[in-house]
Image (cartoon, rainbow, N blue to C red; front, side, top):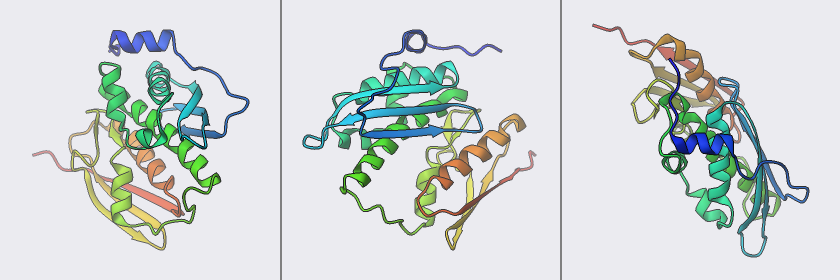
Length: 217
């Protein structure tokens, strides 16, 4: 079945803005998912006095939704204070694009996480935040899993109450996810997305994600 995109997504994909690189960028990040093959690299110029994102460029490797969300996210970030971006949720990009197919919602998550990663990197290098690794807790893991999307529904694992158990020991994380009636074709995607988000947390040295099927009556 062909994936149906809104006209806004088509417009951003066919005519993306802010594509390329900035030679004098002071904030750079690359975010990607081995599960879906999408990847985004952002280059930014952040004014150290005003904390405004003066300019931004991106390189996108992936599907139409990946390009469209990266383009839209870059437009939303340009000219904004970094604190505004740090509060931004993936839903904002999805809404600006007038919707995304459920199997492509993860692209908006990737786009926003990429922006935040670039800002975090710049803050650490500028001495504005302490780069010391935080203590990993179940709450921190659950927060990371909030941005892991079930491709079948377009909703996060936490919103669907799919996360059954989280265990943290010596910075090693174990997560059990209930898949219920989720189609098996999405199993690998869920595992890889969840593992990637957990392993991106500072201090995590290993992440194990176990899927448990709920018998259908």
